[in-house]
Image 1 (spheres, chains in turn green, orange):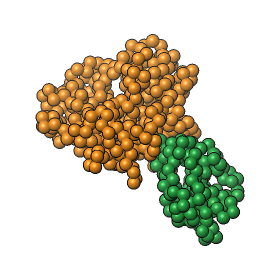
Image 2 (tube, chains in turn purple, yellow):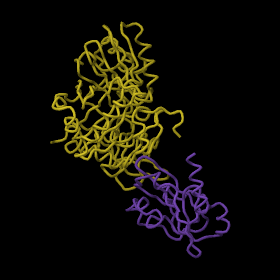
Image 3 (cartoon, chains in turn green, cyan):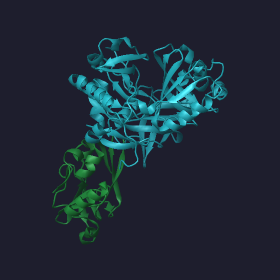
Image 4 (tube, rainbow over the protein chains, first blue to last red):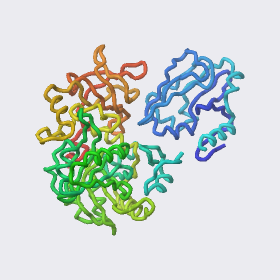
Length: 136
Length: 379
């Protein structure tokens, strides 16, 4: 679905910090939403502070995204172990702008207990409503 | 979001086309297409900025030169009619009240353009200090729309609208032009490091924006063949930082002196008296302890940001006051204050970003190659 200019794929889960979660078996692929990349605009640097094998707690800071004039934290939307970090972002941070739900993914996390994570996540429709309330 | 914020004549245009941001109480454009394309348009061709939010005052009267020589640090007596100078106002301890451009319109009439964030403060300071002089200080901020047309194609853009008279206004000169059918005042000044003009549309109150909108649209149309971009405050900041120009509140403030900021060229200690003279004279004799320098990051990584510490070997030597990603140089750049003994081009330092020490080097301003970019570029 869409809200205004923002793409919100139906099959994903969303956090209020504007990360998305795609379930793939016992792993979750995580990235930032189309809304987030459009707000940040011109992303020039991405840093995932958590290394592969490290433990991420839900809502824990796992890295930062920098645009020309600003720095924003990225929070882990789920709890688990970092299985893989998208290494392409080191040389091509613009992938977050170009394909926020595709090649611009941030990390794969091996999930601890998604049923628990889910309580704090939103469905696409709820995320769209959340974006709407933010603009009021 | 825009509730209670002040707007400029171009608010409708900005709101439709730009990502907006609050700045000094105004709802202003941060970027239209993006900071990077807007920045590059100004370095390579031309860009236009709405800078109506800036503060403006007109000073008139028989003693206006004497008054301005007392309240500002630069030498106003060298300013002939139709010329402009960069200057500062200081407090008694030599701290910078503000930096600004002062233009002499007529022998006894001056225009001062200062920072939006200091509008009230500066006007009050001028009025307060004018009491013992035969002058009138008038706030004309709300009657004027102001656009900066900046870049190597700025002159040609304006020539299409105002003819050859544009070229007769040399750098740091000013004069009247007829732009399309509107009389405007233009000064060949700016805040980007590039050649360019600041265009004042007089007598255009906010409630009658037609004249201002007309001039803005005419500039955009004229610049179209050169690839003109409307530019927001984002590119304004990246451009001025690369050029080594100060942002008030970041790089200079009331506890920083012009000598520390590297603005000694606008402090004329030979003048008889001016506010802050004694303090600045003393500092000059004793030597400054810190100095403003440029920094350039040497490795790919986070960009430096204000308040981060600057270290050399295992000692903190200073701090960042402005920092961002340079769209032209494609790396992190900063303005920082460091101990004067370290303010030497090429000095290897580190900037502490979060838990890391990132390699950087001390640079002179401008941060770009002045043979290739900026007003003094080789044509």
